[in-house]
Image 1 (spheres, helix red, strand yellow):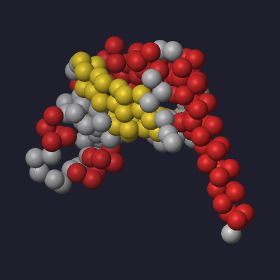
Image 2 (image 1 turned 90 degrees about the horizontal axis):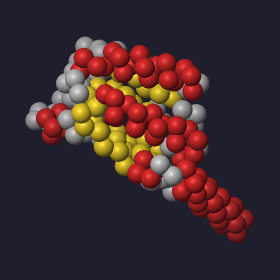
Image 3 (image 1 turned 90 degrees about the vertical axis):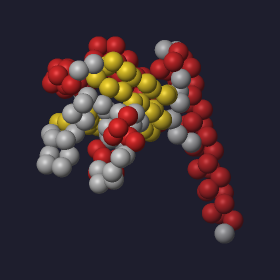
Image 4 (image 1 turned 135 degrees about the vertical axis):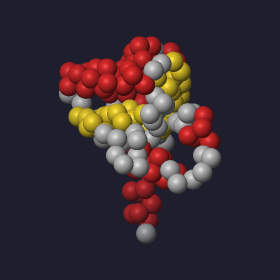
Length: 166
């Protein structure tokens, strides 16, 4: 089982992107999170940041020129397709499994997303399997992570027992 977040959004104005990049870079440094700047390339106009939490897929803050969040790998997969709904609506979702990053980094990431959504976004939606986004309840979030850890441990034990039989 996994704990994931899915998010989608659009900046109030694309002109806010340099300020968002500078602020997120500073915050990542203060949290000791690694990150990379993603510069627009010929044929791929995305710009933003990729944040690298330990034991977690990159967290993408990459934007189309109109200010819509967009996953760079999805962009590469569908950029040649005409009339792609994701491009036309700006409603593409980015999904990140955060379970292996741990509850603390998960909650810090959610707090960062909440802060950025209020400061920079005209539209921002987030679905959080731990329910921390919706409740801001650290205890509930930690319980969800503990439950996933217990389920993973049970799976590993079952696999070991199965292997011993054969």
